[in-house]
Image 1: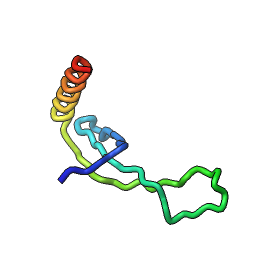
Image 2: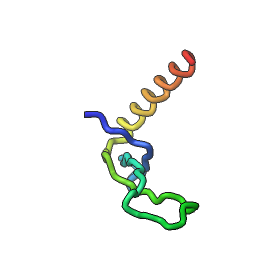
Image 3: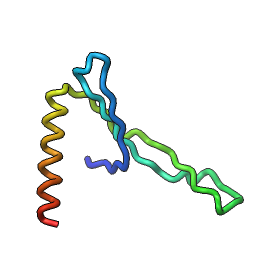
Length: 76
C-alpha cells in the first residue's frame, strides 16, 4: 500500500552507527474553525512511517536516491 508523505525528519544515534527516518504528512486541521479568515490554516502532522537502518543501508539508500534523481534530471 502506498502512502503519501510531504515531510521527513532524520536522526543519528549516539554511537553514530544507525540512522532513523520518520516520514510525515501535513494535513489541514479542518476542525479548527477561525472567525478571522486571514489567519493561516492550522495543520496536523501525522506520522506515516518510521524506519531505523544501519549506516551501510543508509549509504546504499543515499546512492540509490542520487542515481534516480540524476537520471530524472537528465531526462528533464
